[in-house]
Image (cartoon, rainbow, N blue to C red; front, side, top):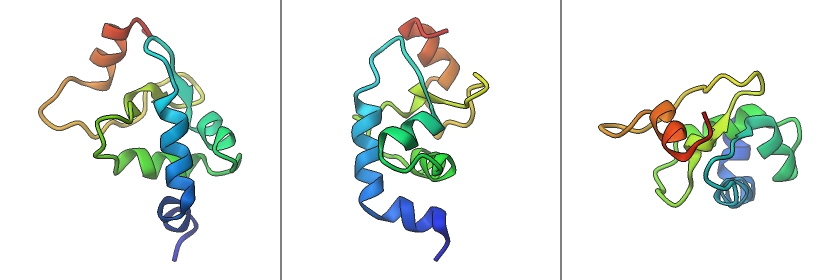
Length: 92
């Protein structure tokens, strides 16, 4: 089992989702900062994997961005883009 898969399937997923739920509208947080807040500072890629597979609309995964400020991916289908959501919330 890959490290990313292990972290995504463990209690780490729950901690990541809890951290992301606390990101307020109009704010963003990097994958690395989410990983650190969830207890695994070197697991930014695992956070990306968790956010990529997120289907829970209570987890505002669009607020998680890359450390360099670029947006990164977003898994919404037939919905507003990550950029549109962040602009609507005042984060961009």
